[in-house]
Picture (cartoon, rainbow, N blue to C red):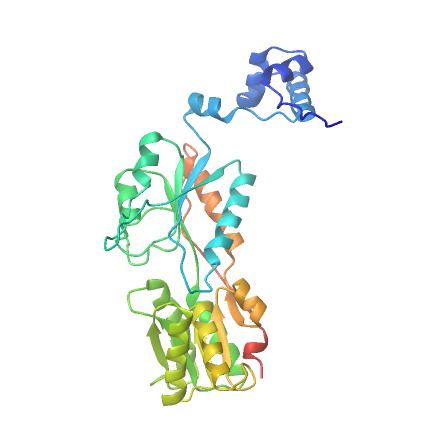
Length: 345
């Protein structure tokens, strides 16, 4: 015999179990200070026994709060090892759930071939429908139409990423110190005895990429090591990383590489494999993001504390949405270096 699943408990069920009116149950959920302690305890016990969940739709109509936070996802990146966004989204969902919020994922809509995506695509639809309480934005370069447009619309949002040179920005943000992470990676390679340490980064225009490159340059300058001919800027694909690494190995002879991403570092590993060289023993390689690919391939990588980023973002959201509470300032977190065989001699 198959057991029939029990239907979810209702407010009336709780009222009957606790021996109170429906209004008393509603007060226990929304205005507990109105009830005597013994009555409140009785209702709370009934809620727990019945595993009752208040109707969120009804609460939305009453309070104009959906407890939903919007996060726009960009298109999937092909031919890369970048899975940091997947890990971040999972961490954000967990941190939001513990705070009583849920993440609503949305896209910017379809983009016709040859056209640029609408930077505010998807945002206006949600703002018009009041479907979300706030947004989490992940692109924060100077003049980014998303942050500018949301600020103009007075839409509450927090950002994963610094506002960089935008000194007028007043929104809460959380970011990871990429320069510190790459500096630690370069220092690690220097401790392994490397002096000709190459930088494999992204093409100009990426402030995140420029920030990470600064860590490599700072470490090299600290040890009075030359950087001439030891860097390349390419698109973030495995093939681009492989080709750039091959060129640098032929022209400049670096003994180690620090890369702006695990994707580029995997490209370096491919270039070394084609030459019969062993990562770590022959040429040191360090990536950035500590992706699952890096963990499987034994690639040393800089790991961003994305779980901590998510917790700080949710705290900033709660402060932003709470009447009378001051918005939080920017938070800059420190990454860590996960050392594996690819960088150890």
